[in-house]
Image (cartoon, rainbow, N blue to C red; front, top):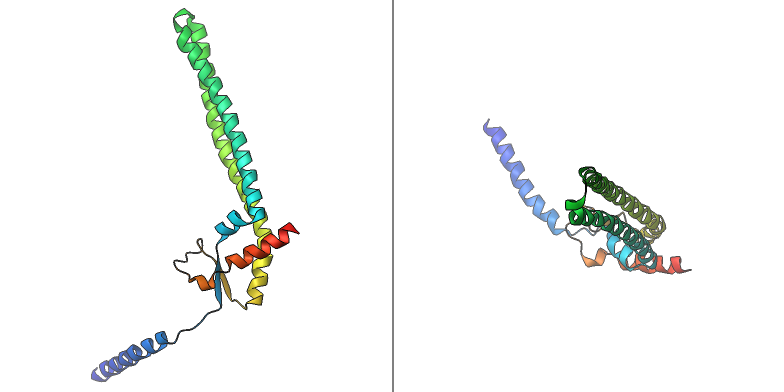
Length: 177
């Protein structure tokens, strides 16, 4: 038992000395990061995609406003004429308002899904254009790994491994040709 304890203590001592020695050896890994958000915001193709998304969203906002205005007009009509309307006419207006509320909720749900689908389509198209450039840079720089800077779980990356500007420059050059 004493021999076992002595062996374990010796192993622990060797490990304690070996770990700091390894930690002091700075290993430079061929790794890079890119900021995909910056590529989307700053590239010509990304700006065009975001403009298309904004136009679609603005059209849906205008369509929703018209639906809301129609519903509000019915509610005002009901409020203003309630004392002069028959019970059946009041019930009819209330039913129309309720139907418009249901249609508005459906519209909101459908719009949210449609805009999300459009966003995915636009980003997927950008990714198809950007990936060959990222792969090309990775091969040129002999990189083993390229991380998406903010979506990979990465908590720190030195600016020296950020190749976003190079990807952006090549992407804008190729897309404008």
